[in-house]
Amino acid sequence: MSSLTPRPGILDIAPYKPGESKVEGVSKVIKLSSNEGALGASPRAREAYRAASEFLHRYPDGGATRLRAAIAARHGMTADNIVCGCGSDELIGLLCRAYAGPGDEVLYSAHGFLMYSIYTLSVGATPVKAPEVDLTASVDNLLAAVTEKTRIVFVANPNNPTGTYLSAAEVKRLREGLRDDILLVVDAAYAEYVTRNDYTDGRDLVDAHDNVVMTRTFSKIHGLGGARLGWCYAPDQVVDILNRLRSPFNVTSPALAAGEAAIEDVAFTDLSRQHNDVWLPWMQQKMHDMGLDTTDSVGNFALVKVPDADACDSFLRSRGLIVRRMGGYGLPDWLRITVGLDEENHAVIDALAAFLDERRAR
Ligand SMILES: *Cc1c(COP(=O)(O)O)cnc(C)c1O
Image 1 (cartoon, protein in one colour):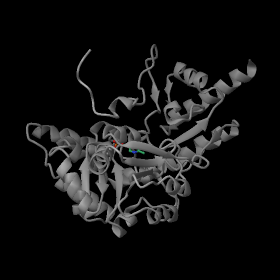
Image 2 (tube, rainbow, N blue to C red; image 1 turned 90 degrees about the vertical axis):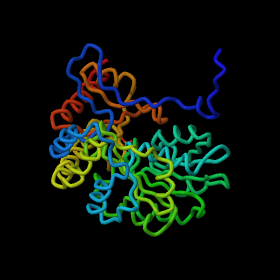
Image 3 (cartoon, rainbow, N blue to C red; image 1 turned 45 degrees about the vertical axis):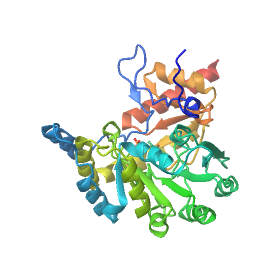
Image 4 (cartoon, protein in one colour; image 1 turned 120 degrees about the vertical axis):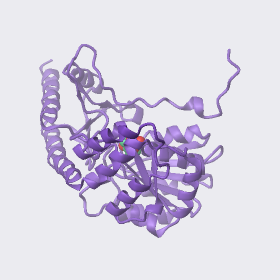
């Protein structure tokens, strides 16, 4: 027996299972399991990544100066209020480390993004889940679950894996109902995909309060998941804390270069959104036509309820289609399917139809 003992909470963490990318015996797979942008990365971002290889012997700019300036220019923010991270996951983790610890509670909604519980446990704090209504976060239930121990509230807006969102008015009501010493983190990983006119990514709340942070990622619409790059927009005092905690060179130089090119390639981002605007409704309509229930997702993925999710997943896999099982999110009857390229979307819809036909024939 080893005498090493990790700190309390760490052994309670169920290791995160990433979306798979291989199926035994199938040479060509279609991966729709991780919400990666269907069109991949902008050609300009890929070129910038390659060009950065010239300088791999140099440490990156630890202050991410150019990237923060590019993000600030694109979004009309001050660069001083932006912190970049090795994926937004890193920033979520740093916020937990900064503001929660043993005896504290971190609150999020029942089917909220899994990393919230992982990072909460990693700092010895206690995860608390508020029930959802119709697979949508409920401000009333979140507020009712606040205790004197609550330190952070995470809301993914829109949420992964449900794809549902809270209106700007609802997120504002949530902030107004929380004590000032509770940090509200609005995780807007899918913000670029949302076209509803009552939506906000949360930046207005960051501007208006000193206890709200908005996180964003380059992994979804910008198609840079492999580069690991995220950022947050935060009030001065939180920026100061994050800059003390983060490792000095937390973002690599190729990621910085690719991110800068990606954020400036507005035409490519627009193209990616337009692709999603066509294919997400198409996919959801096809699912409804088959009699399947979906959430009203506004992300780049559908959450669909299928009869016998295990069998359905195996059937899809046998055709080389990898989607995401949802047991880890407490949704064992549902599958999350990322919007892909035209032929990929057709393939997954055809396979779902074939699965249902086969079941009916039995
Ligand atoms: C994908 C995702 C992230 C994190 O992505 P990174 O790759 O770490 O930037 C954060 N929040 C939600 C809700 C996500 O779906």
